[in-house]
Image (cartoon, rainbow, N blue to C red; front, side, top):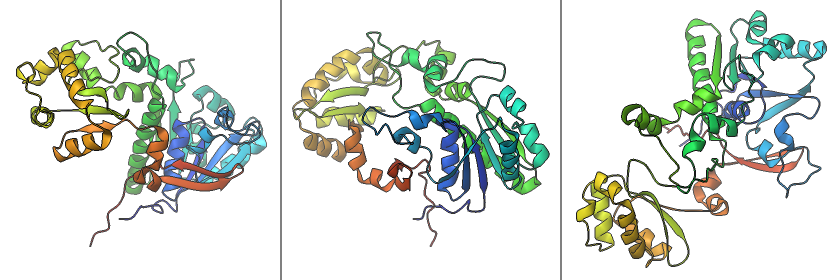
Length: 358
């Protein structure tokens, strides 16, 4: 197996973006060998440089958050209100293939760093613009705002009514994936036609597009999703959590009748008339949970792993971050580098592999 980390070695990307979504796109291309030039404000740089944990060195110029999506880039600090720095930027654009921007359109036009200005400099440039809602909106679009506006917050949390934000800015990351896909299509178009592209990706569209079955449940069955904790509205037992006798926690993800039959046989659960179909299991979810809870609690983690894996029953061990990072696969995904803050680490954004053909 090989990782295509030089596939874009001749590509030049200008990153006029901050926080998470835009920089995640820039890092994707950096990982694949592109020259990525990140333009940061002279006064302070990318705002996430200051997003430090209480435990981080307050004198450092870089935060752990900043490191997560700023691997392998060149960093230039410019004042884009200064015509001299804008002129320097234009010189970089003349040599570039892609520009990633999350400037508001009015600000970009005023500074003459919008798509129209750059197309005058290089007519085959790929200009990828990230926005929150639309060009007329004055709302600032951080990920938590998008989780609220796109419906995620209303259905994330406990059935007791406490809403819970996703602990990772997943809508930012979904928007980044949308932008990567669009840029790759634009590169194919450029290869065939020699033409550049102007791309727009909005956080709100990326969020709504990620609603998947929850949106479909509403559109087709008028089901209004509500907080269910880890449970799934369509499947049971799927998302139920169980504490083992050694204190570990597992989650079940039984997705069909055959898996459920293997589950109850492995646990020697006799009572199954109320649970023959998935609809039965949804209807009698609490009763089923009570029965499973008693059986599963008798096992320690190693016992349940052997039992479920030998019987092909989908489950997950609820791991903490230190346990995840000790996982062999995680170690293979860590990227290390040295920066102004010393030795730093983060996980890859591009985790696909190209398989060598024999």
